[in-house]
Image 1 (tube, rainbow, N blue to C red):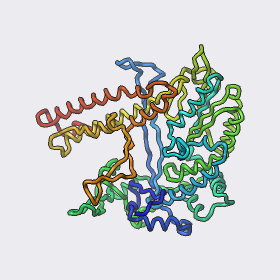
Image 2 (spheres, rainbow, N blue to C red):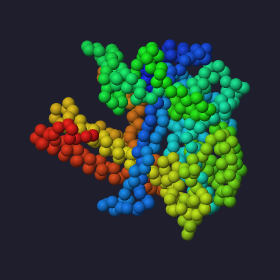
Image 3 (cartoon, rainbow, N blue to C red):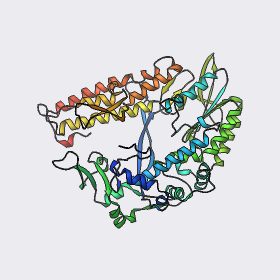
Image 4 (cartoon, rainbow, N blue to C red):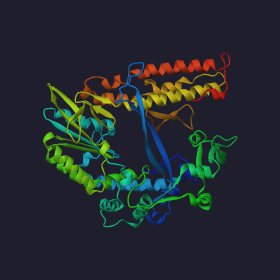
Length: 523
């Protein structure tokens, strides 16, 4: 089989129309590579979903302790993120033009002095000329290394966040920089149609579309007496959270949508904002920030400082004597690209030797007084001048995921089709312990010879502990020990505690114990 284009990426989420498969490759490639077709292509509306993330933090205001002596955790307002999904063909079109723009962007900044300061959504090799790219662990380490290597100075560190980054991109500036990267005065017709699709946002609420078909979806299922054939049927699904489980592939076909549901389309006609989540959005965001990156880097470079931007998060490290000047420059420069900084997320830190110990601490932006010994936080890590740790919310999220998986597995053991009511522990060990942390290449059984297994291009990327172990190894040159790895010690104990609790619940609620009705146990 011929090698697939890098931009040909098949998506699994349900949308309008059936998903594109590998069998569609030839006609899709011909269509997407035809600039005249793209020039007149009619994009389907995006499907909008709101992702809500719960936030729990130690309650530092009351300082109340729980029975174990730890600070009680307080529930904060959830973090809400709007995500938009393009139809399957539209997504591939965006992916193709993202590929084109990425090449143009990389060529544009290749010889720019700020090339290595822009790190998000780019393939930056760990070692030039060799396989393997950097990730957020490596980017964070480069910041901490710079701070530590200048521990003979009084340093100021500024961490800033651009408020609602994707929602605030000015369309005129975006269009201008887009053409500049293409080295053209204006956008070609095919690019201009992409620009219109990504700025004149038309979308549908996923739940409304789902309910317009009486909570039914088109699902894919196998055909009787065939191991390879598939068929599509409309089926009742009680809740959208079961789409994946029920193998839902589509809300409706395109003709059906155009006939019955145009009234559901919502238009966002304004002068700023692009949808977060489209295949092209991240590259467009980097293109938009070209002038900002250049100006900030030039200023920082002249002072011997350090600048890095990871999407909407940026960090500046500079000698203390330039602190007021860089704060003013930062605010003036962000205004010049018509974007706001999030004041509540702009943090100031000082690093200096205190009693011969290099230490970092937070500073009030207005009064310049020391707030606390709170360490620098950046890209999911904290650094106090001596050691690097993973921020605790990462472990909390992993534990909540673990607990939820045990609840579902316990429910399945009690009420599922499993005749002997066993807890399937193998997959739990794989997801939540060191047994599943090793990253490895996946193999598949050969169609010609069942006794032979062939390499695939897919990897088993492990679990969260894979990330912890990688971070531990990367940060070891700073920590000089296994401080990061030690953070995960309690997870093993908690995992076994959940096994004992689940097995006891199963024993109490199944034959031989005191099995109860379905309504008395909730995953």
